[in-house]
Length: 136
Image (cartoon, rainbow, N blue to C red; front, side, top):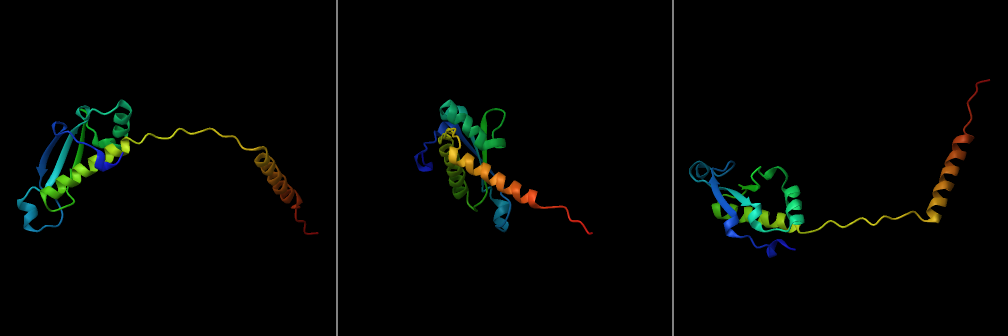
């Protein structure tokens, strides 16, 4: 699943605007351009496996009430920050839809075992050939 394919239900989202930090001159002091996006994870209607992976990806951004908190303050306008927050959320959800591949257990071949034993023998022979140095 791609981030563009993710559909975000509006009833699961709530936005608040904060005063941003960083460059912007007097505009920073006057206008609340940073966006804090709260997402109710239960209302997204995700499959339980996807929900667990999303919680793992989000980490400490998930509150005890089951809300995902994304703060976007990269840009100087509310609209750009709102778009950025929603894009980051969509990327997280898309990443959570990717199931990890199961590892197929494999065994070393007979030739690989023989090669390992031969290498050990060679190394052992090199070490055995080193004698003690005597100064007589």
